[in-house]
Length: 353
Image (cartoon, rainbow, N blue to C red; front, top):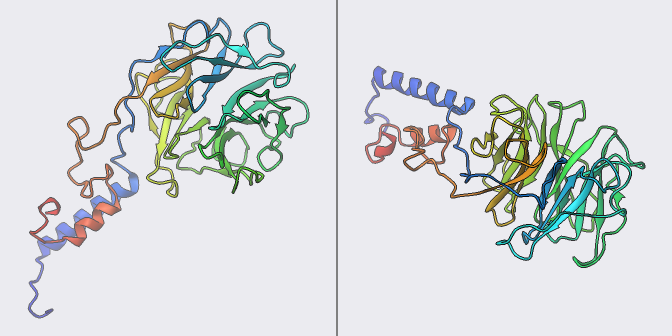
């Protein structure tokens, strides 16, 4: 078979080497990143029942979409920032007035950044109250049913908290992962994204793990929010490529076992020349809540919402496949090179010719 094989000309070999070099370079530099995986409608301010002339932020929507937890500096509280909740009877009506969660959760210190679990029975938040390990720690309060009162807050302990501040807790839908931000100095930037996990809901949280250099940058990366399916992680960042001082970004993965991909800026209309941060996606994947100090609000920072429209693909008129995206996965990398080499000099695979 070797004797009868047709020799490849020097020109063909030169072309093969050139194609290999080009595709390898593209794959290693990610020259064709995937397009933003979400399209958004026009953001809307949540209105005067939720927002005030004070700072209102840190939205965390319940799985049923009927409770919105947030922090605020509005008058009548217990400290600088207090935890509040707004409720509504159904998702088609406006939010009711925000209600302070009371002195059991709030104190003379600052209570901020609430994160509600999918079952609505656990609320995690950040506080600089006494009894912690650092300037800001993550605390948790629980209740037996959604009709019961919240129990006394408990510090999450040294596996999660450190002598550095810990911020912005967010539970995965199964309650087995807790994402948060911390500015522990030995890592990538001024603030990084971390995750702690546990085997069951009754187990303690394990040691916190940094999400790595693909997700984190040398800038401040904070306020992580994981989608219900665990495949999209929204966060805020001040990294290069921003439209404003801070923008909202998203990183995605194919399965929960895969590594996170390169983050993508959400772009307009969610991000503006103002400060846009604190993303929180609804459980049904239809709405993104966030904060902004853009014009049209009631205070310095307000809570906004943006409808999530159909997710674009890179195989439509607006996002055509690059000519060398041979496996049509919206990326050009070494996987495309493998397809090319598998069909080298074949006429039976015209898309790889």
